Length: 590
Image 1 (cartoon, rainbow, N blue to C red):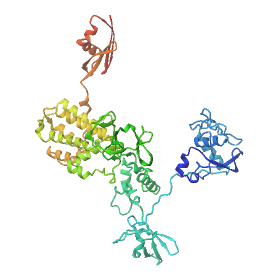
Image 2: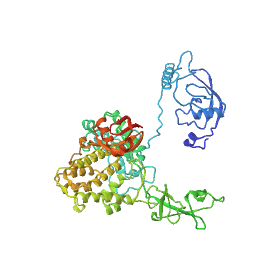
Image 3: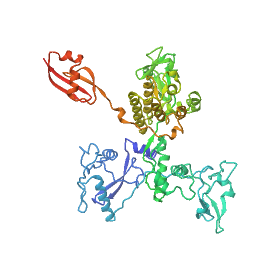
Image 4: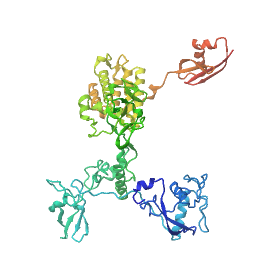
């Protein structure tokens, strides 16, 4: 057990331990409790000594079963705690003595009552144990905020006076390490050594703070960057904070997000901020992987081996799992034009029985799969790149890069440009009032794009705009009152093009300064609805009926429909059922 890491010790399946020969007296039951040393109990957890509860903890149960220790039920709700630990909620049982009775209480209440009793009797006290380990905050490097701390010759710590803040880095020509355990600042005696106001000789701290020292609270300073007397003005902080949305990669959840919360809670205790938490909502965007790579395998005889027969072998090899000798196979890259999709996989066009391995991995220089955004911008423009990054899929998902996808969104932007600026599409821009259908298409687009943007469903919002453009290409003309709101919707997604379109359409100032379009629900009300008509439970036709028609009016239309009459002619309609706007059912006999 001593050779295992903490992670290995917590996950160990085969529990090991040894009885010390000693006993502890339970202060509540007065019973002797045998003291064991066990591999799965970490010295860093609490005090390093725990009271095992084998009936209600799986690891304790495994240990107790192996070493034949008593298993006593104290929380009701399980089937048989001798066979398996019950870890759910329940009321306490077998938990009472002359002075303390917690039977019947929920676990949380029982804990609180027991702690209060132990404190009252002087037998213990409540304590909060934090899982977080020490935050290594100092760095032995030049770059970083200097600590405003100096030391006297006897080691006394002397904080810098407020008038001397901030302590700034000296201008240097070299950032080389000092050659000792101290940072590069230790090599600059004219900065390190200084004299205090009382004449005592001081030596500055030569370590610097990590980058977190500044980035942990930048969201506050951005709101009031020129304030010389405080991190942030109280009124400014109360107006703007807390942050509505924190969007970052998954790695931020442990680093910047966690550290910012530390910082913020300290500032809250100091009265600098008025909220205990800095961020209201967290979204972790997914990683963008390199392009999908396709690998085909061959054996030593240069014969193709389908991926379904391939598995990992020893020492990082890949082998044919059909062979008893585990014959090694070799993989090589194959171009996508040599493949065809078959089900969920790709296979060789030349031999569809040969499946290839297709996967995307994280971009890295060593793998040679890095996509340079400058190259994409040079080829199709910044708006196409921006739009594709949002159109790849849901924001939180991990997604592989696909150059063909960039070309697709670029074609959409080109179609939009031709529609609104160039009349090669044959659809002139007019000052005429919009038709009812055009207003309906526009306001449906406004509604959908607004909804999807607010929920960060950017890929869906782009699809909504693509749908609008497809519909608009079927019109004889495009009224300006329809074109302008669409450009406003497009602006956050393709800002360079939207700005140019806004100006070409005769608008000023910038589209950025224009308000977001508002949806008008009255344009989305359907005049007619399509209703399925059943005869004796089977759909026989669909009919168009006024959206607000009552059952009598709908039945009149239905029963006059030839496709229905052939099923009702010469028969008696025993029952008529209409679910408004959805379905109509006729029950006939005869």
